[in-house]
Image (cartoon, rainbow, N blue to C red; front, side, top):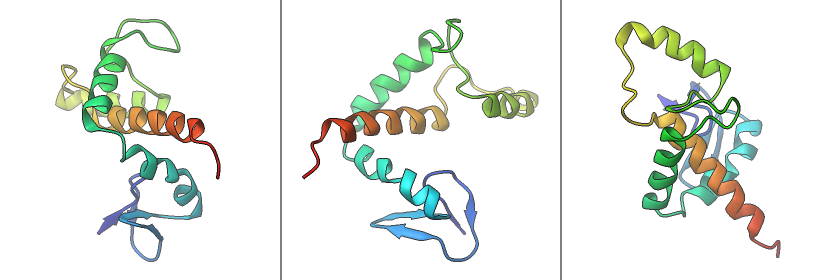
Length: 113
């Protein structure tokens, strides 16, 4: 089954397509425009920033990393704690968040034509 490239929801029927990306609804499709921009950024740039964020200070509380990005992630981490999450490397969710953040900055810096 297909998954939404923006939110990760399983798509049973329909959805929206944009090039090689698939989205569960119009909201994710609109938000996913940053994914297309972010995929043009070299992977080494993304990975460098992901590790910087992962090992850096939390932008919300200032605590030392590795960080937990959202309250939803806190819940996921509590559930995952039974399996012992690997804190030695960034999660795929953190990589996606960083990729979207860099994509948003790149999109904002590109003049509208």
